[in-house]
Length: 564
Image (cartoon, rainbow, N blue to C red; front, side, top):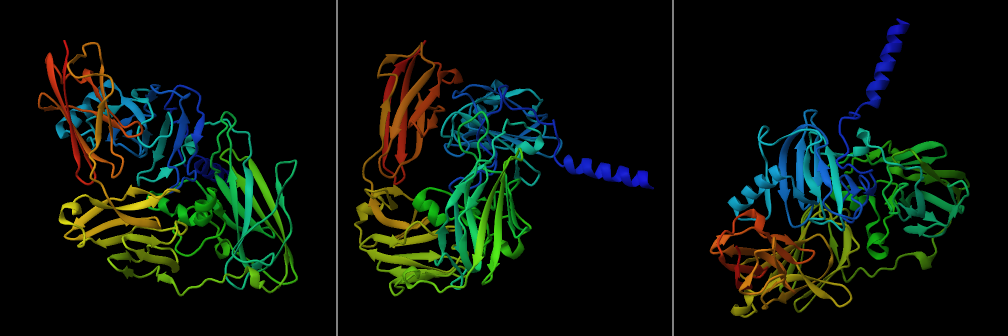
């Protein structure tokens, strides 16, 4: 019986250790794995869904299938992952490869047939289970910098059968990392008006004291009531100087576990709620992400574990206690922060109380629709747009809408409506809703719909909005050729396109009346046609490119070129 129990315990332990298959997926590149970004790293609007693998600052490295399977999806877009491949494997997982420069010849031929059939550079296809079978070690693509990439690298993901991304390092990928996470900031928060830290309320910066052993102490604080903490922490791997995200954070109050945040897996439905994990106001004003170590209302993130009292701690008068934070990276290198707390019931200084004049502010409800109106402008906030009931600035001056500052996190779009009846008929097709940004308050196009005399746009950012007008057509300029030029020795045809105000909406290129594929790189405003597509076969060729902006202004470029 003892032997059976022993075997059961051993098998249970092995099962726990092998929850994710080890050595099943190979490295998608044949160079050492050095990371530019880790899984669940904190980005501005989402958690990072995979590993960003460095490609030695160059493009064109071979990208291999991580395991046998079939290509279940190919997507090409101007933004996001750019050129991306999705492979579904027999074990139920899907691997994703993003920001690719180009596909292998077999896949390139397949996707170009789709692009020419749809007459569109941007395509998304879902091959059936037998159409594009893939073997382990097969070269499927070449690394690049397409889409929203900020530099050459391979974005690599592993998703489960519910399309939830999982940390690929759980599958046996080995990244050299002997460096513990570091802490650059620590803050205390009061949960309500009855709580106080160091005589203050709301967010309070604390003095961080580094120790020689890599841990940190915090200067003793006085507190009373329900409080929480927030931390700014990052990690570094051995072979890369860049800051990466941490893997796990745990908190302890007087030795008892208070909260754990485990960055192991999340769903795309919840990734937008990163705005609830970080202190959004602080991020917008200081460009630094404080991770809140407590759970506020309307926070649906699944990253939390063992959350006692939602991570808040209650400090009593005349007590001494210790709050500790343990931050770990995936390799279990860890860093500790220790905060001594003296319980002291003190009144809040009048100078530190908020004296906000609420008479000129508008209340937006979190659980029901709120509609604000003034002059020719209305703004609708549907239920669950804001996380909490909030007071905001709402003022309209002519066509300029002052809608608070971008310091309040939003779950989804609010909707702005302008009545443009007073605009001249000939101008109504050229106007749009714009957000004013930067020091000079330049207008930035917000996707605008028109129904009758009403312009509508949705946005997830507070700020200043207005009506802008665009009557200037896009520009089109050849890069590597001139009219009536011979291009026999050229592989590529390159054209620059640009629109300064409302932005490019669409483009279409034809040669001798036949549509040709031109890849669009928005980062360089360049259209590129590859003559190896084999579409252009005549000696004399008439090129025509039409580019249209977001309000319908269009430009046409025409030229003749020759090829043998």
